[in-house]
Image 1 (spheres, rainbow, N blue to C red):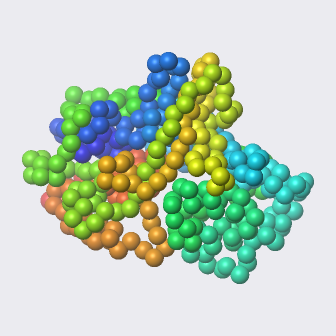
Image 2 (cartoon, rainbow, N blue to C red):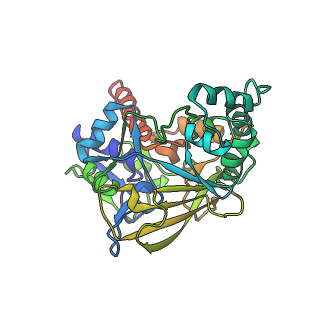
Length: 366
């Protein structure tokens, strides 16, 4: 098992409970991958070390699974955005629309108004920019999405697929819950403790600070690999593009911004957002606060990959790697890096469950 993040943890636990011996190699000194959390010694704040992770899902089986290992506290992600010197609520909702345009529209009036702002000549949006112009019109697009997207992805919004924006809702009521899923929450003691509990089984051995090498595949009955897909092949035909994140931590007394996430949509501000981590655990009280300024840039060879970059014109290099992976004996590629997909945590867990089920079915048929 290569990696001790969510995907491999779920698969490892299921295999262990079926009587298999599982060995996990994790190059970092901790489990949980990028959703690693740790308690700050000075402030007592639970810090999301590699950036914030909010658990949200409509998948009841997945929700029950994580609650098996950790109590989840209620949490609603209410994102704010600074643009043009003012603060608004995201996702765009009735309050955002009325505040931005200086109006007092009712839901039906707002719907008609936004439709009048939209570029109706765009019938089949292919790019992020086309989707936005058809979705909310030029003014809202330029205020909330255009520059933020340039900072986040480093390329023009007309080169990015429309699917990126389709994940964000547009609401004609005053609901400012960033997500619309039935189940939303935060693990009471953090994600790392939750994943440690998933891996707490006598048949599971975790080797921290130990890199798995592709040359080791033959030493095991089967390998589930959650490292970078291109890295497995030594990047021999090129590197798949990723964005990485840099975090500039600063600690303050009291409350810095009054919310967990504040997006910065103007090009005069170099960071994409500031996260204030004590607000991710609203049931706790802390006099001090830990904040991150977040910067996005192209991922280099020594950086941590976060977001796979998919372009409108397609991914020919990815297609070549995926073809090799599909034919790779003794290895199943899993997780966001192994499958080169952006996946929320619930999707990662569901994909791990489904992948294991398919592998077990094939193994039984051999």
